[in-house]
View 1 (cartoon, rainbow, N blue to C red):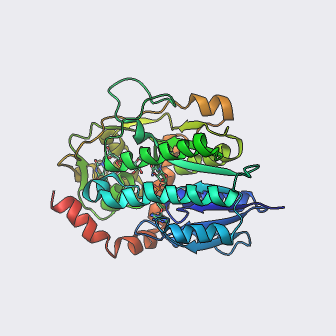
View 2 (spheres, protein in one colour; view 1 turned 30 degrees about the vertical axis):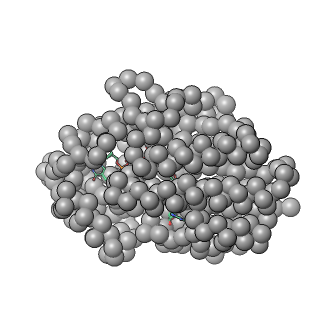
Amino acid sequence: MGKTILITGGAGFIGSHVVRLFVNKYPQYKIVNLDALTYAGNLENLRDVENAPNYEFVKGDITDGDFIQKLFADYTFDGVLHLAAESHVDRSIANPMEFIMTNIVGTVNLLNAARHAWDGNFEDKRFYHISTDEVYGSLGDTGFFTEETAYDPRSPYSASKASSDHLVRAYFHTYKLPVVLSNCSNNYGPNQFPEKLIPLAINNIENNRPIPIYGKGENIRDWLYVVDHARAIDVVYHQGVLGETYNIGGNNEWTNIDLIHVLCEVMDKKLGREPGTSAKLITFVKDRAGHDLRYAIDATKIKNDLDWEPSLQFPEGIERTVEWYLNNKEWMINITSGTYQEYYDKQYTER
Ligand code: NAD
Ligand code: DAU
């Protein structure tokens, strides 16, 4: 009999790529996408699969415990892939409480509902919690985050994700809930909300607006193409060992300023502008509070144990990403036309 799988946050950036992969690759599964459609959730991301016979969308909020209990009573879920979250560090600095509610309370609501619905009958059941490398804190010039690295979250966002990771592991040890976790580095690619560095810069370059770089642009991130992350999530969900954590990364570190220079070159080429035109838009602005210097993932475990590694190299990934945004201007216009401008003005004009 086919399995019914709940994916939370499926209308968001990474979630929509995971939903697409699962709906297309596993026609025998029924995929239920639960999403509150916050500012970051967008059903436009899923137009190509919305009529698939094995797909269903449910609008709902994971912070509503009664609703979540009822959902688990109405459906018989065999598995949960939990991606719903407040995900933007700058917003967590401005308003931590939403992060506490969704990332911590929302996760516990799902854990409780799974625990009660499965009622000790855990065979073939699985609760997969998708998390971030930011829980490990900030690296200096050397070293990598492994699965053994001690947690040291330093923003309200990463502290809320760290808290949820601990709770997921606590349910494994205390109640034997069949969980698996992964912690991934920065994703980039189609459908990312333009509050994040790469789509924000693409949008601003296209519209000849300043590209805001925090501090001196020396902070380092490890970038992974989102479709490769979705592939890794598929592998961890199906083959990951219960109770284990897998670090996922792109082996692709860039300082923000170098990354933006590459992006500017690609944008000049795609927009037919003179080389160097877009780079003139680079503007250094006040740094992010508590800005983590460097994240870098050691992804040896997932490579050795589950045979996953990134398939796409960065030059091709960034070209594909730019092409997607330039070919999907309506998508960008639609999501930047509403309250986005209020957020943008508060974040960048009032700095
Ligand atoms: P996103 O902000 O693009 O999407 C989050 C989704 O969750 C949205 O569709 C939103 O509507 C939904 N959501 C938010 N609050 C909700 C609530 N209370 N109830 C139900 N749905 C709610 O996020 P993303 O970048 O796609 O990240 C997805 C997950 O992956 C998050 O858990 C994040 O911590 C993790 N992650 C992200 C990255 C990255 O680089 N973006 C890297 C590693 C891990
Ligand atoms: O590492 C994984 C994390 O990556 C995820 O858990 C988060 O959900 C995701 O948002 C991302 O967090 P970052 O804070 O690293 O991503 P962001 O795109 O916001 O910023 C990337 C870097 O660029 C960071 O050093 C801050 C900087 N930056 C960001 C913005 C939005 C700028 O210099 N200017 C900007 O305008």
